[in-house]
Length: 126
Picture 1 (cartoon, rainbow, N blue to C red):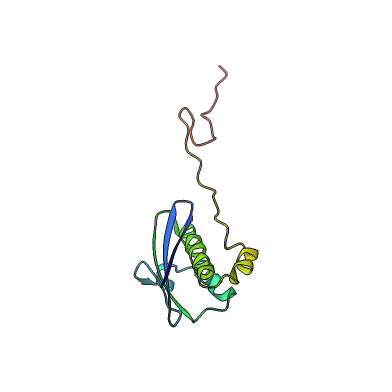
Picture 2: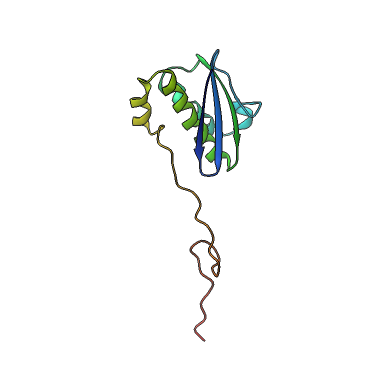
């Protein structure tokens, strides 16, 4: 069993990869039930498909925090890192596809005296 983690925005995913039949479970639910949109399902499965390991590994994921898209991309990063732990030859193809880079962009904090992070209150000249 290989375990790894992936993060994106406020989402943190813990990945447990074992040899099996290709079943992906997210927070004790099947992948298509947890992520109803096809785009999110494709994002989660893409590292396995790229390295041609689609039906070889069972993936158990615990993910929390953030939104649905952030969680899907955190899972994608965690699976990619776990696959590299299994076979280092996968790293170049996964990096070329952009799956090995942690996207560090997070929401900018709101400042006091302003409406949002950068938006100001309306200015009245007189």
